[in-house]
Image (cartoon, rainbow, N blue to C red; front, side, top):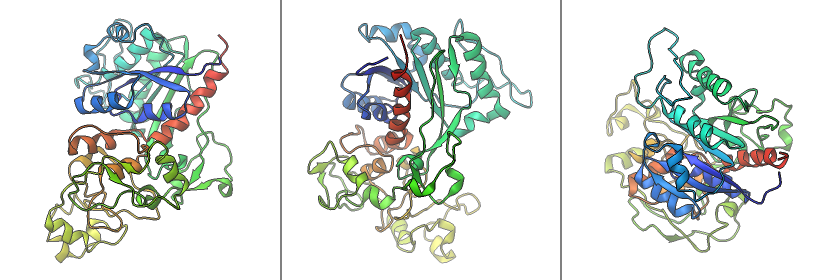
Length: 404
């Protein structure tokens, strides 16, 4: 199947990190997205001009209604990441199952459970060539595998024309050139006769437990690129201060850019937006000043911890300063609350929205819409764009070999 662009829809789209990665290949076009967070949908609309971006609970928008917004465009691919609380029997006419937890306790009462069913309900209706679902690694093991087994049963029973990739893998974004350790389960289904091969890792980081080749082939570490660092991710961005209020600012440098910085800046010129940085209270800044790179809250002397006290049996790493030479740890949506787990490696402040977006590998021409907390949370909830791009390249190989 040779095709210039492949149309896809993005379910539970958020701001659009997953979709952005697919479009970065130049081979895919997002024609529709849906999410129930208004600011995220405004960001999605702003960055995906060809998309009909719908702000609504997917349970209120059956696929036949969604199709009406697409103006006859064919859906070749469905991507998305439904939340993963439990799994239940709530559902559609064709796709419905009863599963219980390992201790036989009924787990069907969480109203979010049917979001998985909505994802597969859309697959059932649109019958795309492929679908790609991302989720937390615990998806594979929750309730001793009951959740994952339920999904496999749905595909086997109600979507018999699809095969599921033989062994679902967990990928780490640091292995694909993202300056962040972030592990995500990637589940891929495709019409019988197609195939899918996970993208081979391209980058290596010393923390070996995160670096399993998804294709189980022997890796020559010497031939892999070095991991992308926090310094590479943010050092060329505008010079700002704590409580920075100006969104669009000139870059701090324009010469001597490394490969990652050039890639992030490909769609921009002299300035970049979303440089907003939260106000850190004075007590926290005093504590920050005592933290070296890699330092966590419980590394601090007791008298320093008393300046900004937390429950020490719970919040051992409540504060963490990033390390310039390493990738970041996982950027979570909690960055929208205070950012204490993402203290700038050399300055006594937390990260700006753009700095966090760089660590998530969003290109600089991707603009986030919303207030400060909303934009931070959009970044934290996203799939790293570069990892999504690598997955998309593997998906395209499957389409390229499909004979219609």
